[in-house]
Length: 53
Image 1 (cartoon, helix red, strand yellow):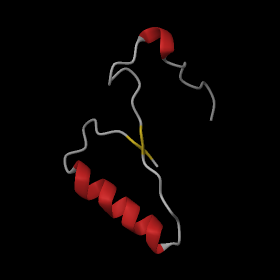
Image 2 (cartoon, rainbow, N blue to C red):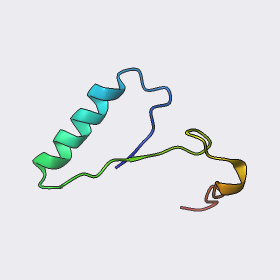
Image 3 (tube, helix red, strand yellow):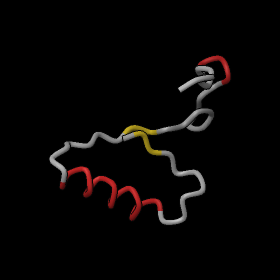
Image 4 (cartoon, rainbow, N blue to C red):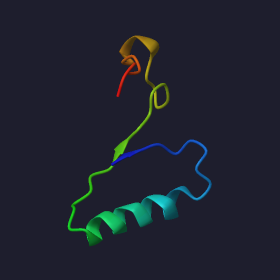
């Protein structure tokens, strides 16, 4: 799971519920931070946003 905390009011309960739901389906979730410019990242190390999905 890619997780970012920006503008999530109840961050811990939301992420916990998502992890629990995935585990109930038999998954073994692995959480990674979903940050672009936070946590010490610089403009030069950020990858461009995709133009298509």
